[in-house]
Image (tube, rainbow over all chains, first blue to last red):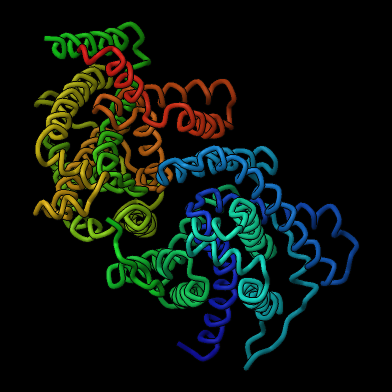
Amino acid sequence: MSRDIFILALLDGMSYAGLLFLVALGLTFIFGVVRILNVAHGSLYAFGGYGAASLGLWLGQGFESAFASVALLVSGAIAVGVVLGTLLMLLLKQFQDRDPILQLLVTFGAFMIFEDLQRMIWGTQPYFVADVVNQMGTSELLGVVYMNYQLLFVPGAALLVYFLLKWFLNSTLAGRQIIAVTHDREVATALGINARRIAYLTFVVGAVLGALGGALASPTTSLVPGIGADMIVLSFAVVASAGLGQITGALITALLIGLSRSFCVYLAPEFEVVMPYLIMVLVLLARPQGLFTVVQARKI
Amino acid sequence: MRPLLLNIAAVVVVLGLASAFPWLKIPLILSLCYGLAALGIVVLLKAGQISFGHAMYACISGYAVAFLGRQFPSADGVLLVVAGTLASVIAGMLIGAFVVRYREIFFGMLNLAISMVLFTILGKFYSVTGGTDGLRINRPTLFGAQLSRDPFEIVLLVLVLAISLVAIWGVQRYFLSSGGQALAAIKTNETRLEYLGVSAKKVLWKGYVLSASLCGLSGALFGLSQGLVTPEMGYWLRSGEFVFIAILGGAGHAVGAFVGALIYEFLKMYAAALVSGSWQMVLGAILIVIIYFLPKGITGLINRRKRLGGGAV
């Protein structure tokens, strides 16, 4: 393996890990508070990507600044996340006290609906809007020419989101209330926290994160039907390996999976797609509750 | 007496439909195959566990049939089905030994991950597995007779129907046995089960192997009736379909899986014909509505009526 390929794999992996982290973060964040593993999260990723691409096609033409393109991407993601997140939350509210398995299946049903909805709105032709990548230009790193978008912007955005979320959870009232509800819903409610409002807030934030992952992926991947289904299992792999509800864990695991996958692309391409699952299986065999979870006592 | 009558009625209805409308043969075979797989999911549902990866056992068994059919072109179809099922039983024993340590979401996700590993490997190693095109299965002899397409489908339908009835009976017996009762106790209270001196892992392992073998049986028969196996057979969305059918039918009685499968297959057919291109949306909406109104599925409805009727039947 030459030095150039090593650097390429490293950069590819970081950029991929950034996207993976955003999507997985949304999933794990929602699980932490609402205790629902949201299968429809993959649709949020897909809709975020399509939404941002469409917005870019309608409004982005003629703009030359990268800033405007980024603003379009982000606002597309927020719009998609808020709308779909609210819809999903309204749906799940009807199933509040049901068996968690049934709640999971409700999100699976929603996923099936979204999948066809996406096909109806955007068709089956691949979408590809890469203006923002060209606008950001390239830079050279140790002799390897690489796109700024993937080198700086995507990992940067992922880190920014990570620190923002950490700050939000630790230093704002709403954030601390979220932590309280995650820890013990009943006690939090008894202390006067409106758990329902917190659940809604969390759900929308998580949904926006999923859509943001899709939006940031849209300039570098072609959008086709089925990307949501692939992404949801990948982000499951990240979340389960990290431990459900673990934010820092998700960051590290996403990096691990992203890097191992991109090195696989260059070294053993047959195993590229298998790597995330292989890692997940190995992690869960060694640590059943995920890498970063503290073991809890079983309730009788 | 009553179960016997019901069995005869089921046989008459299915075979009658198939002879009245010959085009129905394949949909009927397929829905019975789906029913067998969903029955496997029902066994796990009894323990409160859900697997988003059980299509892999159908896939393993289908590929085993394809490989063996290729190696031994003269092998009988029945033998192939047995061999395919055996392959998924062995796989179920090995994988089961690991996954029974996990519960609920981790159990589901681990199954999902293993099935995705299998799915991608089958798709990637083109020279061995035929890649995403899959492998053809040439029509083998059935019970020693080389049949043309039409009689082959009739014999296959009778075979699948017979297997399904035996499976319903067997699983129902299992649910009533001590092993099945212990399995249900995993859902209600696993800790108390262990206090009784029963190993929950062992109980779940047996249930898991049973469910893997049912999915394997379904996959082998599915492969024979289609004449083709593809990695799609093991994709997680297929596992999701099995879960869907199991929920539709309900975990109350083994027969539910087959009722669910028949409804599912025909819903899919009509939805595809009526609103082509968005059948998935229709199914998704139906799934949500069913969970809302009938959380215990169709058999839940029957059991409720039975209770209201004062336990007659």
